[in-house]
Structure formats: C-alpha cells, structure tokens
Amino acid sequence: MKAESDGQDEMGGGVAAEGGGGGGEGSTSSEATINAAERYMKEVMETFGDQEEKLVMFREIMNDFRTERTDIAGVVGRVKELFKGHNNLIEGFNFFLPKGYEITVDKHQPPPETLDFIRLVKVPEGAHGHN
Image (cartoon, rainbow, N blue to C red):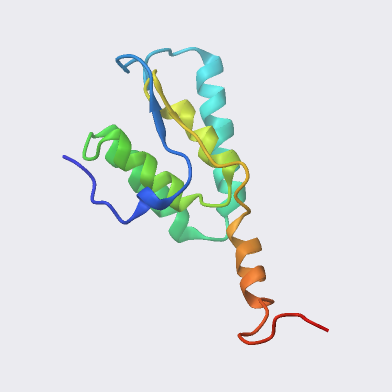
C-alpha cells in the first residue's frame, strides 16, 4: 500500500536507491546496532520532548513502516516533513532504512525558523530600500 502524498515532493533531497535493498531492520542483532538505535531515539526524545504530537507521529511512522502499511518513499516523505529543519534527525533515520536506501537533505537550505524570521523582517511592498 502506498502512502498518500502531501506535496512533499517539493522538499529538497530525496531517497537514493542503490541495489536491491533489503537487510535493514533485523539484518544485524549486534549490541552496537541496538545502541545506535537507542541513541537515535534518545536524540528524537530530547529534540521533541516538549512536543508530544511529534513523538506520537514518529511512533506511527515507525509502526507503519514495520508493519509495511506504507512503502519506503512514504516513510521517507513523512520523516522529512516531521523533522524538517532537523537535518541530524533526518539523516539519522537512514539507520532504519533497508540497505541501498538513503535520505539526503539539502545542506544549504536554512532551518524553517530562519525562513520565518526572514519573512517577518521582509521589506514591505513598495519600499525598495533606496535612501
């Protein structure tokens, strides 16, 4: 089943597929893998600890991914939208993707809060800054 598109194709970056995929979750059961997953989840919790709705949405994304209710592209789009402005979390999600898939982010795109500030101080229509 494919996930619905919310216009997320407009975002920078995407999913790069190399090879046949497979080998993601459950491919290794080493202690290092478990520790890496726990560190990532801790980072998500610390980043959004005061935003319960984001944590709930992330759990839903992970559950839909685990139960195959959505495809990889759908998961990637939802993660990128949820974690917009937090490139460390977006890139960190690569850990959970099957081998051969990777989320890339536009490193030159400022965080959303910077764009909001720029919009607030934008020169009003008709004033062109000429002195």
